[in-house]
Length: 326
Image 1 (tube, rainbow, N blue to C red):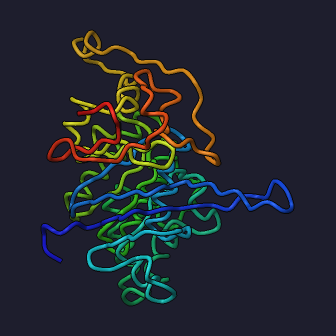
Image 2 (image 1 turned 60 degrees about the horizontal axis):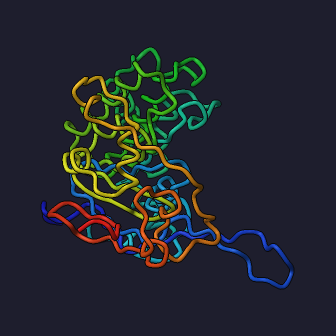
């Protein structure tokens, strides 16, 4: 794979869930949690997927990691089609793609000691000898800022930030190329959040990692990410590099999200006007024909209620799904 080729490519990815039938004769309703998402992520960069709860961002991350079934589409990692992998080939390929989970309190096995948790990917993927795995675990503890005397402790003997460091060590144990971070700091105190984010950035620089960063916190995203994709009701409504999106958001939904981000800069506070929205999100089981943000958009026109906008290029690095953007 060349240096300019994307590390990860998504083409029209859909994830649908069959729901319980409302009556005996009718068809089972479907929830389309991810609807036709296409993305491209370059090696060594960090892309954020942002949106409010229920937008589909975590479902998309789980689909990329092959932790839930994908209804249709393509997910390419380099020249490998992840959706074509099954059984042993999928298990082997997991060495190159790992996951950092949101909750450090529930994502670690309480019955295993810390060194066994970190060594588990090496054992399951049969990487190296037993001695080399133990040496690797000691190196990982040092890399993430944990002490050697903590190797044999159980998860309940660590703080939340230390538990997330164990989760990070486990994720990078197999030397992956891609790490999917599902809101890795949202369950932590603000001071600890900064420490974990700085650790992730240092590891990315040292190990040439590529991050897919799932978050609803745009302050964290601005600190961490090179590019950002905004999701709403299962679709990407705007995608751009960090500078373009924060300085010139084009979709009304993105503008609403950014207006709610607090700032310590008094000049920015004086320029920024808080945008409030009313109305309810559409029923995800019975989606309207037009733009899914139309029922809440302060700029809605008649076309928005009838025609679903395509995600189209408006600048070199900027794509927007909105009829009102020229």
